[in-house]
Image (cartoon, rainbow, N blue to C red):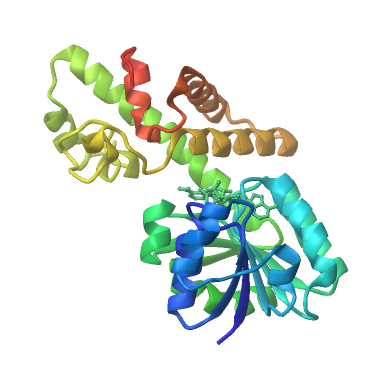
Length: 294
Ligand code: NAD
């Protein structure tokens, strides 16, 4: 049993913390939102008055927060007071630069750290099947792996500080671009009088095959479990896709990478969000491309 501080008990953090409790760990949790603390308590998390109290006796500290500024502010607050030799794991999706700064804050206070963002959404968080993409030293990764296991289907060590965040935003840039590509193909098929099922039957076993088509098909019917069959209830909300595409474009600018399709995808999701569809599943972009309401 390990004593784990879990800071950020939102849509993802709460089910992740619940799986750590189920695995037999003592989890001390904190969030700014009282309702989230009530849910965490029901899962067996010990609720603490603030982040410092949660961290005080913890061997491992996990953060699951909205963005880089939240992670850095929490790290600056808690790292000086953390237990000697504690391991910090940040699973939030944040920009690579902030992730590297967070590692530096931890190192300054003699702590080990990894960035370990996830994919798999709230369903994967509840099922304990998230994919973790980790960045940091070999030693920190080796220490983190058994802690991540009860929450994970797959854990990949991607490289040094920030490599987990780099993998996450590159993956999600592929996802955003490919969803738009698949949605455009269905819109064109409709105009050409080709049925959804016929396009699916061909493309899902041909060179157009990809996850956005075969798992998250943006039209109802061919893949019964895709959000299109439940009125585009997320799933993975368009607001989060926009967040990740923006992170990819900031990273591309900083690194001098040319990503014209990533930029276009970010712009299309920005327009979709601006029309008030941020809470819709990101596959709902097909309605925007058709010019019909989501
Ligand atoms: P969320 O908004 O539901 O949860 C974030 C929580 O952090 C909130 O409950 C908020 O109150 C808390 N918080 C903010 N500042 C805090 C502070 N200073 N101290 C304590 N708590 C604080 O978001 P989420 O959906 O759980 O996502 C968390 C992270 O995971 C984000 O970075 C997101 O991009 C990433 N992510 C989300 C999904 C998803 O499907 N929801 C999938 C993969 C990755």
